[in-house]
Image (cartoon, rainbow, N blue to C red; front, side):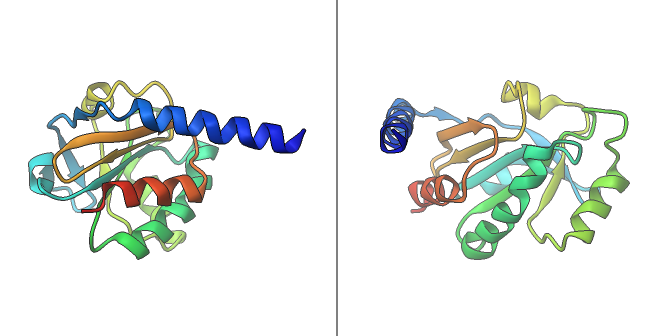
Length: 162
């Protein structure tokens, strides 16, 4: 029975990946970095990207952060990582809380703030975490809502590498 469930999960994943073959281009947007500077997506043109929409109050998001950090340590020279915090998602989600969370956990990946939910609306974020993989041509190759197993994160990063 366990083999059947595993086989069904793999088949579902393969179908989902195949459906992403008709890629859409990532939309342009502006975010605020940890230093308070505005950064727009055009700064990263020609470079593959992993966008992860998250919040500190989201258990699935915080569970995924160590894997995101490991992926950043492995692929950070070749892939632009954007951990996009939905700072306006709840009153308790403040810039200070986010910066404290990042620092206390020793995460080094770049964090950006979607201060007015413009980016989350652009990507039609319905739930978090949402992880979006964009190749160097600006095409969305794969995206998934919910925590990603480390193997799926790594597999999709490899798909967007040049």
